[in-house]
Length: 181
Length: 388
Image (cartoon, rainbow over all chains, first blue to last red; front, side, top):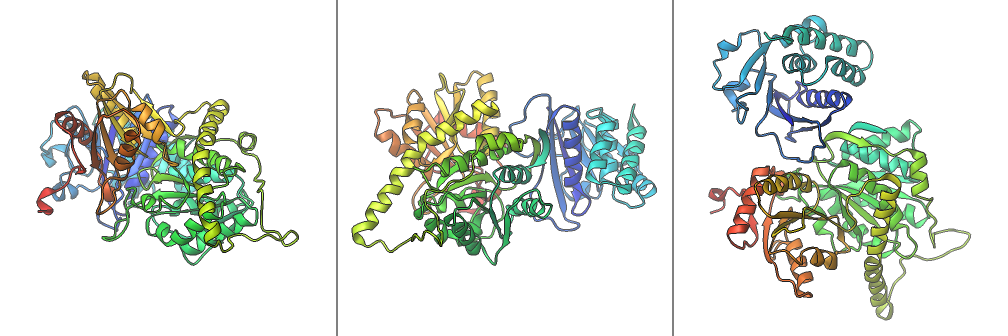
């Protein structure tokens, strides 16, 4: 089983990102589960969402305490709350940032990867909403889910031109992180 | 067809399959998505029901009471304060023997205000005379709705059914669900044929004044009907399995209980995490199993006692308790065992109140406590420094 925790701020689409990841995994023939942290979500407040992906049926429903993968939508959270808690040593932390992983100097043995997701989203989609871009980046960095499945999930969720653009952003981020960065 | 959907949508899809005539709706978190999805389905012409927006949950319950009395299949959904506001009507629906189905997205009760999951709402109206079922996951919640109408509408039962699913934990979780086809649903659940209904051409009175010479008999018949519903609930689960191949237990279910020295008891979505915890503990050589209460009313005391007869210790995990008294499941299970020669050591825990997450590690801690000594009404993961 692979467990993913997404840290964002209210309005960034952390829950949608989780649902898209799990939906894509489902369409890849895997078992998957996505759920929000159930806070009283407010714009700008720290929020979490969770994903589990497995080859077998998923029964547990507790939050993700020892993630394999972390997605950090807003790197200012790194100094606000302990977003790294429980991250597995052989796991991966994906951050939306123009900086290099070294610049963050994070206290973790897990691999840290950065991707300029907001820039990609702004350039490709025309809006700085990077949740779909980060989902593509995670697929590229981990190979957990196929990029085709993610693009299909994105296009189903957002029909029309906006879905096409989001799928394009997914592909850009996927290609950027595929094979290491 | 297997779909990746939200728990609330799994319920809406199931309600659609049941071909309700009337749906009443009043929004309240975390139930709202259920009636929102249904509202969309009605607007899109997928469900041929009267969708009635009301001014309160009292109205929502009154609408389904009236609709069912008129011979219609009626549905509503609510939670927490909404269920309490329905309270008076909830008792009347049962007393009038109307097979309404209401889905409760279980949530805590104020004060302090808290929108998250526990079972305080359902437990507060446990004496109303409804059949009360608890779903373990979204597939079971989906499947349970077809069974619920079938059970409640059985002429000799004629009782309302409350389907409980954990708010947020299930209602807002996305996962794969096998959505039944309309054709299959129709072959499982026949149209509602009420034995008696309000009809201007054949006038009857429902809910008449029952003077002291009649009231006790009416309540006795309700009690009998609830007990008689146990075999009907079991048959519905068997019929469902025969048709769809899925089994979630009947009034109870057990998991790895053979040879178990310690057995957890719980209801609802905690069952999933408990199954994983049981597997982990079994992997370490611990003799542990799980008993799921799927049907809380009628209370399956005999079935529970029978399932626990070879067990040394029982750890009851409750998401509600009776303030000023004790754990509700704990007391009822102890009472059921008292009528038998079986005397396992019973420990009771209050867990996950107001949506506090229940990590698998907390379940392992509970197991270790129970193994060390018997425990009474322990609040799991309590911040003890705040309650001194």
